[in-house]
Amino acid sequence: MTLIETYHLEVREGEMRVQAFMMSDTVARHTLDRLEQTAVPGLVQSSIDRNSLDWDVRILVINDQALVLRDSNHGVMDSLAGQTLIRPEVISAINRQYASVFRRDEYALNVAVSINDEINDRVGAVVLIADVSDISYTVANIRNTLLLYSLAVGLVVVVLVFFISHRLIAALRTIMKVIQRMAVGQLNVRIPVTSKDEYAILSRAFNNMAEKLEQQEKTRDEFVSNVSHEMKTPLSAIKVLSESILTLDSVPEDVYREFFQDITNEVDRMTNINNDLLALVKVDQREQSIHLTTINLNGLVEDILKRLSPLAEKKKVVLLYEEVRRIEIDADDVKLALAISNIVENGIKYTPRGGTVKVVVDSDGQFAHITIQDTGIGIPEDEQDKIFNRFYRVDKTRDRDTGGTGLGLAIARSTVHMHNGSIKLTSTPEEGSVFVLRIPIRK
Ligand code: ADP
Image (cartoon, rainbow, N blue to C red):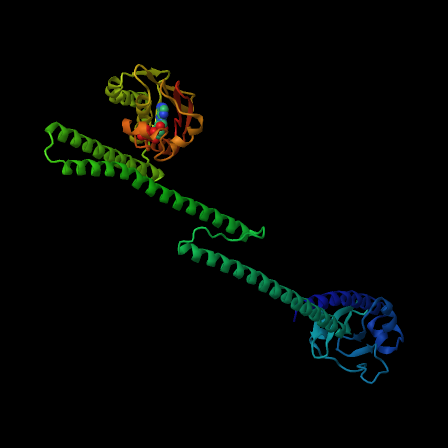
């Protein structure tokens, strides 16, 4: 039995019960005895206001012997009047218990209540039998409507699923094609973005990644070509020098010495480049290679200046140190020392005799400020951004004399970024340069 059918039957039973109790009251007033002896025509019909009912009901009045005294179907062929009706609901009602039975074969609902004829101290029963086939129609109707709706919804869902999955599969195919092309080295391919949905978000993220990969590939190619270019100069110098020695017959010893000194200088130059490249690779590994400890920044700077003072003396450059504040900072001491040292060394290298390089250590509470100021040759404004690029030098010929590799500032910038800090440069040609390193005190 479906829920809908149960619900309708319960509602109908409730209505019938009310009617049955009203009937039982009316009958009790006429007393069962009188009913047994006399016919009271119309009693059964008038007790129920049939207009109030939109269903067909048959009413039986039964005495305590289960004998049917009245049947609203009187005069009809199947009238039960005068017959004994042994049915569970009749027995229950005679025993003063309400009962209802639904007979599916007849599609009839039987409701039985007892009649309490207190005047004669007798009990009887009123049985209401209702044809509830209308409920079966209603249920069938609802079931059909639901089925129709379910079919319609099902159809819509199937169509939607088909379209969505078709779109998704098409989108995934496009992504797959782009990935396959990237896998064979075509890094310039991108996924076309036409919609505004999740697929577009994914495509944009993918395109972003592809962009970065392409950029990295470009940087790597440039880097390799820069390295080979840098190595080419000392290598060809060595070749020229050694070939010259080989072609000369009897050469004085001091000429030999001079040539070999030049060869040694070129080898030193290659060693410097190699060391700087190794340092750069290390700082490029970023998070993996950073070891933060709490260090005394002033001590670190003092050590750097002590180490560089022979170079400053040799170049007749005055090296000054000013400590505005003493600062403890969370940093990788080895890497930070290399960064500061590269900038101070540049100051000494690019400052003529009699000039000054001054280092100031200060803080604003949140950041440490390390200022390296020189009275050197300065850097033209349009070069100021470029000097942090790998192998970039303002004056290539002069830098060969100073032994620069063009990697010092690239190392310094990577290191400072690694510490979540920044470098600011202000410089005026022929007057000098100021580099300010700003590094968070706590990680
Ligand atoms: P290098 O090893 O050549 O010094 P860097 O990366 O340290 O390489 O510096 C890049 C270039 O920036 C230098 O070659 C130089 O031309 C310029 N430069 C760096 N620091 C200074 C400075 N304090 N004064 C003038 N020029 C500088």
